[in-house]
Amino acid sequence: MLKFGIMSTAKIAREHVVPAIQQAEGACLEGIASRNAGRARKMAEHFNAPQSFGSYEEMLASPDIDAVYIPLPTSQHVEWAHKAITAGKHVLVEKPLALKASEISKLIRARDKAGVVVSEAFMVTYHPQWLKVRELLKKGTIGTLRRIESSFTYFNMDAGNMRNQVELGGGALPDIGVYPTVCARFATGMEPQSVSASVEFDPNFKTDRYASVQLEFEGVDMSFYISTQMANRQTMVFHGDKGFIELSAPFNSNLYEGDEVRVHNAKHNDTRTYRFTGLNQYRLEIEAFSRAVAGRKQPVFTLEESVLNQKVIDAIYKSGKSGKRVKV
Image (cartoon, rainbow, N blue to C red; front, side, top):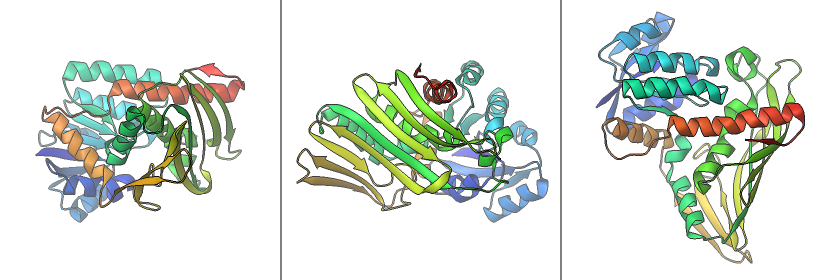
């Protein structure tokens, strides 16, 4: 059993990842750490974790912890991932791993030296709906892929929320812009070559609140928009010359219509629907991570892939600032 320690009492840990660890095969919850010992103890008691720690350093020094999950504010991810790696812990760190692609190189060096598994927590890449999309595209089910379209939006004007705080790494692109990019790359196996983007910033929060993005892959165009100040919406469509594929809940599994992959033919008079019910993509992520740590042949989202995805986000910011198309 891979013994997990949770580095902070963050909402995503409480609501998604800790329950997933407790449901997963091959993993268990060993401890909760917080800078506030009382909060750590309260959360540990709530989830029946054997231990609580009054500091992150204390958790990293514990021989009882095999792996840590890091859901700290984005601006702290690289720092604490590096400390965890050098402490000899396997590391699952919440996305986005970094705010610039260049920051990840030191984690790769530390990982290689320590011989541990380190992965950015893109739970979507473990969901069978995305494995199905990748399979359908590879088989040529919709013919030649020409266009990808996506959206990811929600409404959040809470000044106290880290997503609206620049110093904590807030903004729409770090929080949700990473999803259309990673899913397109994962499903197609292709890398974007250039980007043209418009990025809008909130005048009070100073974080990016809206972005409209055009990505150019080899032979494939992608268009998507994201926002932290629009009504909730999630879409992803892959359009070819013989049909198109659409997902009902591409990013937040089971949030909207349930998890479905719908394949429409060219005339739109025939639709095949693949349904994935009763699945928890966070549990699938934890189980895959645990198998990888155990040395089984299990792919996980690598730091090298994190670099490639962050390069796209970096290029989007650069294009938004310059108003020009830039290379990824």
